[in-house]
Length: 167
Image (cartoon, rainbow, N blue to C red; front, side):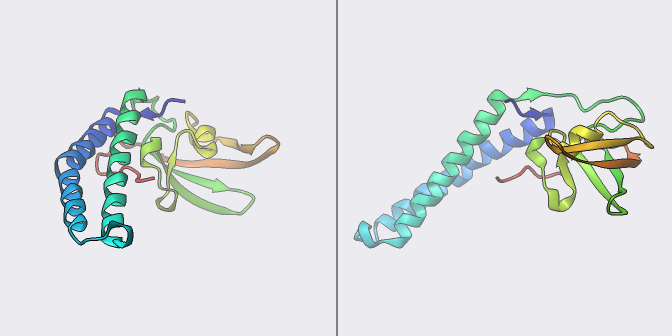
């Protein structure tokens, strides 16, 4: 499956790759070299930790490069009055008699604690493309769903200040 990313997502990932290669990688290599000088490597916690940090950095670089290579670039424009990418949406959950605000984002910027949900999530799929006043069914898994009413939509552009996830 390809991740749907915007040009801003790809630019941010390229910037992170560049930073990790030019700044973090040399620092990690220096840390490994310094820790190696402490002596016996079999009982050298600093050396093991430095190697772990170096490997994490390299893994993150490979992950971001693979994401860019396999990404499906999407345009954030959408039909006026309908829920689209980067819109802030107020929803009403009739079963709980509660309202909630969410913002539809790409998979790279997901943070459910902050109300940033993916367009590919069950809720994102259910509300995407619908308009104010519509009630849609959110299918969590086959046979399990709940209704959600769209109360308001606040259009927004691709916000470069939204951080990319570190998962």
